[in-house]
Every structure is written in structure tokens, then in C-alpha cells.
Image 1 (cartoon, rainbow, N blue to C red):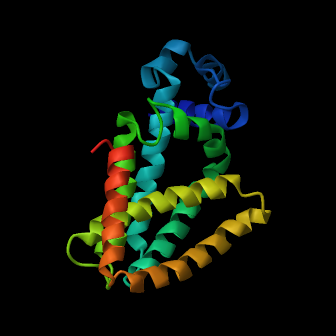
Image 2 (image 1 turned 180 degrees about the vertical axis):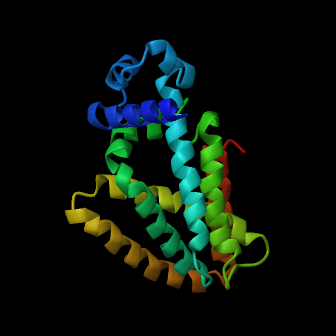
Length: 212
């Protein structure tokens, strides 16, 4: 599997430098010094490289997210986000290059059927962030809230990819602000109308992005 790893790393590096559209598998094979046939054995397309990338990152994140400490769901969300950015940090350049694919590609985008394995793995982290919290809301609301936090985490990642502040300082300030906002929102969950809003928003997310 050493050859596969070398090809994978060369492909990811080329995508980071050239962008997804301009990177070619033939150049990857030439860089590593192997035949195109051997490359196609492991990665028959650039999409296969991207799916392997999703698999690696989501697996690592799910494992690291097990370290999220017990406590209130808003604090657990902040911790889960910090771990997320730590995992993604070394790959920021590649993710920026893949941004058009992540958002707009029907085959390899975040909400395509081909990438569901990775999405569900990460979504499960945020379902657990809420469901395993000391203040997890009852009445089936925890799952809806967890799914909305998953969507919020995607928004934070997009902000992070666009963030031009030194060492993406603005992103970490945003996380501090979100934790304060979520503290107020947590208290508002006792209001029936707010609980209804969470359920309705979750229904919209499932219909628009997950097709359910």
C-alpha cells in the first residue's frame, strides 16, 4: 500500500498547487515515477482521489472528536469546532482548491450521494455533541439541534477558508462569539416557539440538502 499512499499524497499536493480542474492524474504518475496503469489501479479518476481525501479527513476527525469533554452542548460544540480546525488545518490549501467541488459538484460535493459516507460520519459527531451533553434537550429535539449545528459547522469552515486575517484569527474570534450566542439560544429553547423553529429548520435542511 506504500505505492497507493505515495500516489495519493502526490495527487493531493498537485490539487493544492494547481487546483482541481488543472491537476491531471498523468502528471501525478510522472511525479511519483510510476505508470499511468498503476495509478489507475488505485485511483481511476480524480473523483476517487477526492473521495479518499474525504474519507481520511472525516475518519480522523471522528476519532479526534471522541475527546470532546462532557458538559453543555454549546461548550461541546466549541470544542468540536476547535478539533475540526486542527484536523483540517494542514489541508487548508487543498480545501481552498476544492471549494468549487465541495459546493457545486453533483458527484463529489458535500451533499452528493457519493460522499454520504463522509457526511454521515461528521454529522454523527454533532448529533453526539448535543445528545451526549449534560443539557441535551428532550422530546427528540436533540437530533434536530445536532443537525443544525452540523450545518453551522460547515458555515464556520467556509468562513475559515475565506478568512484572510493572520493565522485565521477572525475565525477563532467567531467561535468565541458563537459560543456566547448559543448560550442565549440554549436558554431560549424552553420557549415552545423556539423549539418549533428548531424542528422546522431541521425539516428544511433535510428536504433541501439530504432529500428526505
